[in-house]
Length: 192
Image (cartoon, rainbow, N blue to C red; front, side):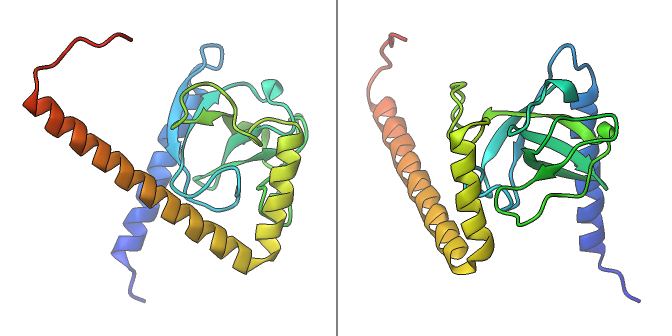
């Protein structure tokens, strides 16, 4: 049997990265660590989209509340899903907002931390659905629609990618304008 070296090396590298993230977050729970991660999956639509960057902070399993989005690791893969019930000695359960069923039970040691905020916002204000409450329930309902209606999921993903591309174009145009104007005029002090 011929083995695909590219797939194997990607899988190995992914496992190494997951292990590094786990090591950083487990380092010292009393002094919270924060890591920045890129979301790749679609299991947390509409709260988290593929390509979003998020910040995850280390915490003990007892500090996480049901309804929060937490990070766990199983089989060298990271899962950023919603916590269904408090963590016990036997473990804990998670579920993605756009998945029909909960994940199999995770062992207690698999818990790594909780979602702090999307990295782009950086303002500490939780977006709807990130924390427990009515926003989380609405996101779960929309997620179930995406789960059971593939055309709705495809349209939402397409719309989101177009919106992200448009925002990038606007950002690039602004950066170009700032760069060209700053090269023509002397820099002035700016109040912050």
